[in-house]
Length: 186
Image (cartoon, rainbow, N blue to C red; front, side, top):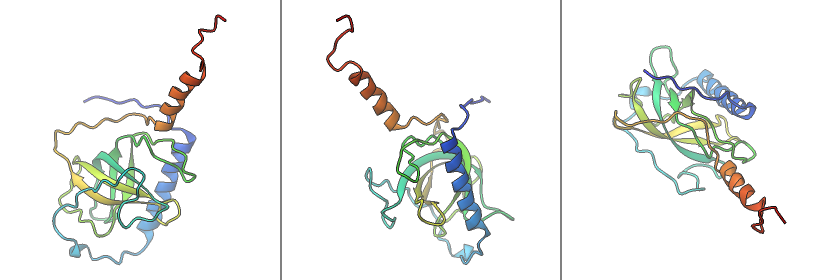
């Protein structure tokens, strides 16, 4: 067994995690009007929307992320029937309510799952790819709209987020520090 050490989460990442947890708790406390037996057998493949485009049927204010992870909690007696506990890989392009991209480190957290997605056959330890929709203007703010199992030998990488904006800023900083190409010696 190996251990992964990650840096402490930033305050913005803690805020995102807290908002997602509140959304999950509010949804879990609402009475379920879904008949668990009505779910169809099989797995819904995770659609991959074009970059910057919401998934089909998703509001324009929503962001869609395709994420991989490992299941650490599945529905069972006394647990919400449409929630999963997932240790997910970093989401580098994760954006906050204002649209600022700050990324989300890999972590273990609860996710709500669309009531129409069947969860039968998923077990703790399964490696999965899922499509996550975040809409800060909806309640709940987050929901998995598609999920599929990955091969058991799929290697997952748990690391700190590397937001594209930071990489672009770093590259731009290197270029703009010395735009004329001077070496500073005059």
